[in-house]
Length: 80
Image (cartoon, rainbow, N blue to C red; front, side, top):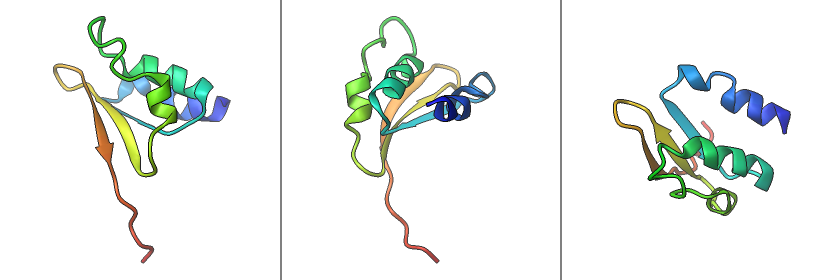
């Protein structure tokens, strides 16, 4: 648990982008709080949403002017 938090939050104040891929319930609680962009948006993404993410899907918080959170679907790329 410490490793994912250290990686995810070690430089969080220096970054404008925070992706949240599927993880365990305890880490998802922390990630859900980090994805909150204000009092109005407090429950937009819940820990259960993060735990239940499909393969290659994530939520992303972007801080560029007005903070936003949105869902992203990525795709698997074949090895070269």
